[in-house]
Image 1 (cartoon, rainbow, N blue to C red):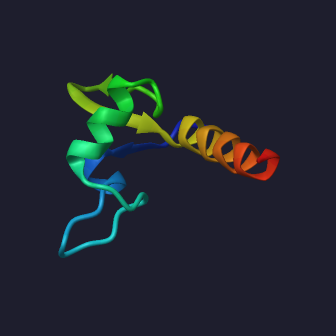
Image 2 (cartoon, rainbow, N blue to C red; image 1 turned 90 degrees about the vertical axis):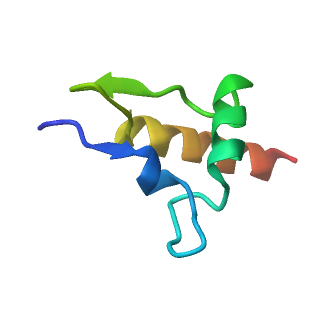
Image 3 (spheres, one colour; image 1 turned 120 degrees about the vertical axis):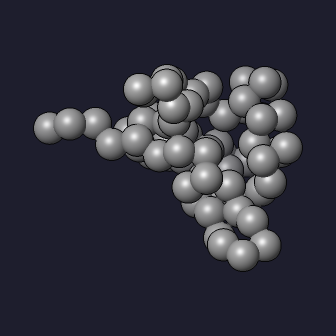
Length: 68
């Protein structure tokens, strides 16, 4: 099975479209820089994120919320 990837435009929200996450591009890159969000990979010269990595990160976030 081929891995699936999402571009930044699929992840962030804009006034005209809801992305996968409810934050801006600035917040997105801050989270990446701080290590609070997975770093991108480059596929054919395009920065993107493997869906399986995003799903793992989301599961970790949910597990962390439950522990509090």
